[in-house]
Length: 440
Image (cartoon, rainbow, N blue to C red; front, side, top):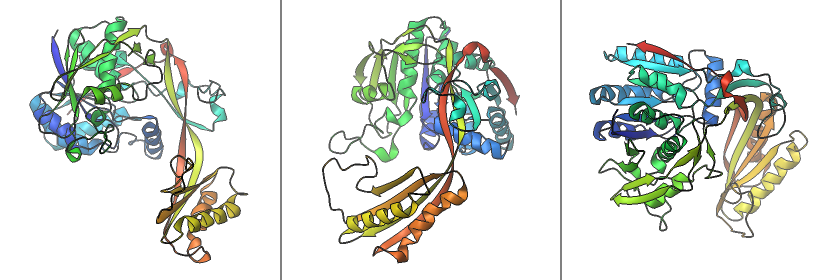
């Protein structure tokens, strides 16, 4: 067993930049690269694409990422673990093999499947968000369980160059190579808890190196246009030292690490994953050098008996319309336009939202402040059951051009089909993962 490995995170979401992962592979002296590209929203969109074409459903940037990375991954002997398989890991694995053949490269890809549990749903299960049966939300279209490290380990055991998964818990992408290389026991809750701390700190990539931390003149971050993504030197006892490639932008400090450690964490003493119920309350962060932070002290309790399942359902359509007002009394004219739309559409939509972008569009209130901006953009959105009904929103906003008020311009209109997301719990014993190995 190894005593130390280096893991880098080259992507923190589906639309992340491509070049930081390339820099990590070329200059980071990695053992593993992780690309974390999946969320509730993105897997729902992936399921939608798969419904339209059974050969799709993987991450839309998969081909571009793999084409740029694959020669360097193989040259540097860096193993890739990624959830870019999204709703279709097998098709994603085949696409990687096709790319390798086109580039005249030999690659072994292991696809992890089993997270798609749609056939196991009854529809009567309780949605965690509503407390009601899943089918009350709408017609169900997908269900993906959050798999854990135990599903990824057999893929790593094949010695595949690339392991591609569908829905797995984000930290598990990082915990799995630690267990594989160090021989950790999945029953050692404290060790897996520390591994989960490492995974959670890395999983959002540039957030750890200052991306989501930055606030000009308050929390300045240098050279953000060339933000570097992080890596961690992890030792067999679980100690981790985080860093980034020299010369890349951003910063890595105790402050950036603390913000990321608490990111999306409801209860730091009970961060529930498929691998462990992690306890972050005793984590110790220490700056050990320039852009270097050491993390120790993660703990854990026995993993849960259930797995979270993300369930997609048909949520109808959203129609949108936007138009801008500028100059003297811009807020007044925008508010008049909003009231006109409200009066014309309120009887046709039970869910209609009117925002004044630049004034009340984010928090939907002005908190007692009444600014007088020079320009305002009106946005109207309505939820509808059909595309025809949804189209009315944009049509009414566009009609403001000549039907007043004065000075409207730059009108645009959109219609979106919506896949909603709720979640439920499923007994982990009902869910079986499997591995498929493909070679170029």
